[in-house]
Image (tube, rainbow, N blue to C red; front, side, top):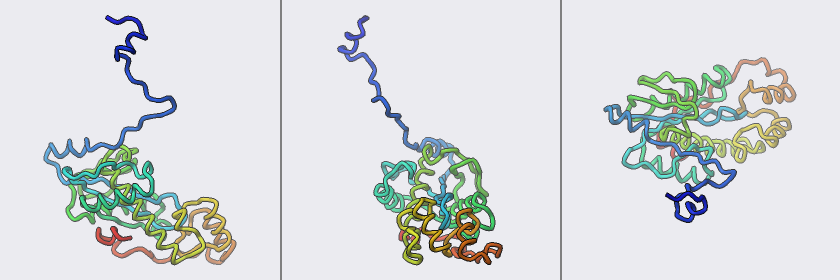
Length: 256
């Protein structure tokens, strides 16, 4: 037996230590989906949304059924990926998986509140899948109104592979949409901040007033309405600008 510590290291017995200051984060796995497949439960979908926090634009929800034999390598929580890598994985997921996307417009968010609108969009995305899943995993604390068994997984986009794939589809779809809205409403910088409440956006909102794409009852937008058009602060909300049966099909989603 080698008792000396230095001798153990030389003999290759000492365990490798991770570099100081670096925390290893395990990528999402397909373990939960595979467990259901072994029990004969299929299809299994993951769903996630993008855009709860912004001041403008819709919430975009996505549902994805990965092909167990063709899972793209590198799928992870969209927040852990660069924009370039998200775009690459978006194309790979679209080419190998079944997916659907649904929107909750600013008008629906104003009417229902952001949580209810997000859950509504997630349910719509699941129902829009080409084949109804037998089980769905959703990111977060809340289950959705789906016609199948549903598990809510807190932090699911970093745990469950199908949810991570949905997070990529939702994020890239929404980013592309916000770039398109920037052409419709120049000056706000939607193409850079995607509607989030960064200083540049708040300054533009104060200077220009709200656009038709802003969420009317989010506090910074209310303040801008009071400044630019105070007579509209108590008005009823506008029609649902994004409602086209509440969803888009996979072919449209792939090009937005």
